[in-house]
Length: 449
Picture 1 (cartoon, rainbow, N blue to C red):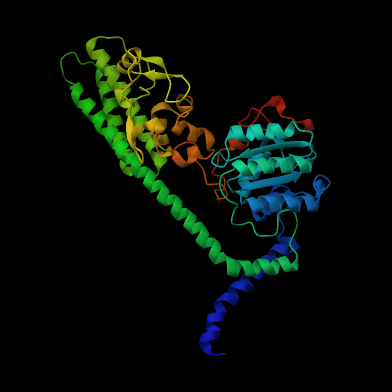
Picture 2: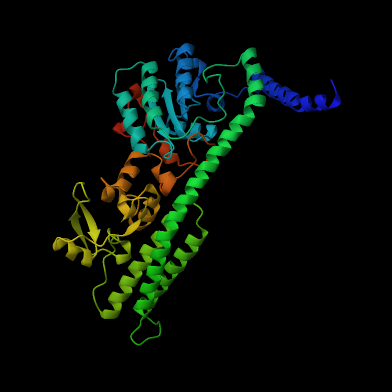
């Protein structure tokens, strides 16, 4: 063998040796976690299912392996732990603590003694989806194996994201044998490059999608910022003019601050969700302008209301009115005086249109990229009800990850590592005897196991 050939082989061989040494360290008794949550978390980093040896009568090794294979085949970030009632598993904080120690965004389902509950990062599955799914499986007369399989069967259909890259082909329920260790070492060398390439491609694709969405939004937001600046000019207020008082000057200063905030925030925006702060500032500034105008004319100060639903550039709404989108159900929306008059006369309101592949369309019939734009104006709690039955509303309702993609609840994509950077409210609750929810609740402190 010549020198060049030997050198070419040295790198892969060293990598293989290093991988096998690492696996051997994992197999050594002293390298095992101390027990309890640490051991459960260490196992779930390697595979989707962990069964504490003290709870082996709840889920057999064969059942655990089959469940782990099902989750891996679905390529979804679903974690399952079967644990005994023990001092190291504190019911009230178990889900949040387990999520923290595993550090991967996903859906976490836990059997604790005879109790069951689950939690999820909102980007992976919405809180309502988790609550409904947990309730449905708990109300069924299932064994532990049946309950977990039923939960996974449904969760894998709606969970967003991918299986974490740290999962191998070993399952998550048991230990390693020598053959598995060698296989893992080979996979580290041979498959590591491919896994990295896939992850890099996915990140690049997502970045490209976000850039395109942000550019679509930039056109609309820049128009809104310009319109607000023109409204400031038309007001023609001077802090030193006759009759100006401190309240007027404060309103004007607040409006100017909102204008500058909107411009600087949009200039610095890197993701579609950043736009939400821009339109929130514009909404706040327009209300200050409306208040200032009322003070100058001696009219009653306006009530703090959402902006006009049909076009937030119209300013704060003055009344709620019944309206139905084409082919949709009637609902009540906040409207300005001009649009209220048009509706009363049987005319179409002056809708804010945006560019789409089908031409200019009302924003509620555009794509999901306009979600953060609308969310900043109307707030996350109000918006879904206003948009139900529209294209944008359907996207918001149907996708658990909608908010994270386009301005709502954020967090790491399912299967990505985020460490302790997540909301513990999504992993709240405790366990109750018999596996029931305390108070029939759910997550965020209102329910439990």
